[in-house]
Length: 261
Length: 320
Ligand SMILES: Cc1cc2nc3c(=O)[nH]c(=O)nc-3n(C[C@H](O)[C@H](O)[C@H](O)COP(=O)(O)OP(=O)(O)OC[C@H]3O[C@@H](n4cnc5c(N)ncnc54)[C@H](O)[C@@H]3O)c2cc1C
Ligand SMILES: Nc1ncnc2c1ncn2[C@@H]1O[C@H](COP(=O)(O)O)[C@@H](O)[C@H]1O
View 1 (cartoon, rainbow over the protein chains, first blue to last red):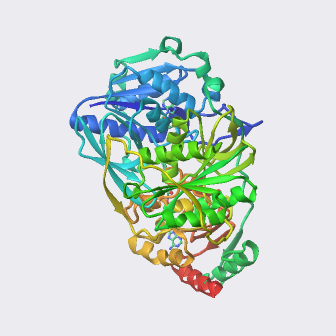
View 2 (cartoon, rainbow over the protein chains, first blue to last red):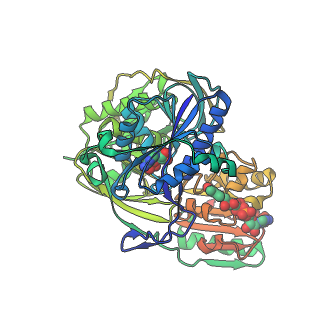
């Protein structure tokens, strides 16, 4: 089974994110593999451990995105493709999906795995768009899989009020929910071995990605500005006997906030 | 002329609240709109959509559409779009909408704005706000090229108006094929009268403080009596006390209900990421220093096992 895992290097959102003059402050950001993409990678590793095959990482990003590829290789991926790209700031999911399409056309794969959304945009658009551009079936937000063979995989998608169980004939695109697994940590040995694993660098011009496909030109949407969410006003704290405090709080909830009105 | 096509969603043979919100909002802005309604045995709901203000309802009604699937739904929306001449498609950012939105947009060769929490419409100019980076930042964004607008909107941004159904003008769509590489094997439906997190205006969530599965059972009636969705922290889902679909937070469902009750939840940053956009937050926690109190509008320091019965009594009183 040949699996491609599309990973995006993103700021670590567990850290404090500052905004100044409508933009996210670069200083102090630390970059990681988007957490859902790590889940996708873990799934890919488990699948190939079970049925054989190779895992290829694919990222579109600046020079420093190579660190994330090395980390994924250390976790156990077999090889990596780095599409060198410096226009990240103005690039939306549509443009990424178009570039991913260019990279993937003419390559061999059975399965493309991605996160259900990336941690910086929280958009969840790239993978289904890519699926459409490559004319592949998609199953999003999976919480489980079973019965993997060279031709098929059974996927459990968390829908709105049911788990939908689908059998997908490969090749196809699947996006993962984080409850699928707990990504492994890279071992020392893995880190050593990663240095020797193939990391292919791809140039946009060589790929035929024209200027019109890049950055703002290739994107269909744009961010005008970033803002911090309004910080919440200080609330009222009630201490004492629950029989009294709950009553007081509920009365205010009704009078001040029109609860159940 | 701009015109909107609303992708309607149905649950238990009723139009979902998030769909009503979209139509009601469009109507309040005086916008012209059609709707597309897909499912099995759903034609009767077209009148509800018409009552809310949809001019034409495009119907894809077939037993093969009972369970959502990307390919058929994408084709149906595309067909409705062509027939209606709409310049915008609005979906809700349910799991259905999350799957369908990008596919519909890509088929039309355009981009999309997803999981929008607020937006303004001026002709086909849309300025939207959407949380990102785990709700630590809000993006203000817009479409930068001409062409069809495709957006998905989180529920809870607008209070739908109560209306009565009127006979709808309907157009039946021909039923497309599903994707030949995909086959639905089964649907593992859980108790389906539960309100979904994605469309709830009230959410009652349980944290590790409930102590175990019995604690979840202790809290749940409050949710039921409020007509609320039942949420949980990751600690509760990871422990297996509740299925993962209940998880609220950075890696669970991001929610913005009118009222959020956090019971025995500490308020870890990843949990706050998923619920701090709620309009009103009520927290019960026995630890006065629990971080949840930093975001709570009403913070009750106390034992949830004592507080929940009082909450239920008070709710019963308000309701009568
Ligand atoms: C990458 C990552 C992603 C994550 N994503 C999520 C996510 O999406 N959602 C999420 O929720 N978490 C997420 N977490 C986990 C998060 O960090 C916390 O561990 C989790 O939210 C804690 O859940 P809790 O508040 O229920 O439990 P705890 O932190 O253990 O808090 C229990 C609370 O209950 C109170 N309590 C105990 N007994 C009572 C009682 N009788 N009455 C009243 N109060 C009582 C205690 O004072 C305490 O504050 C994530 C973590 C990581 C690392
Ligand atoms: N620059 C990129 N390089 C590789 N994969 C990407 C890139 N951008 C997005 N993806 C993939 O698409 C998923 C969804 O991205 P998004 O549409 O931003 O939520 C991510 O989790 C990645 O798997």
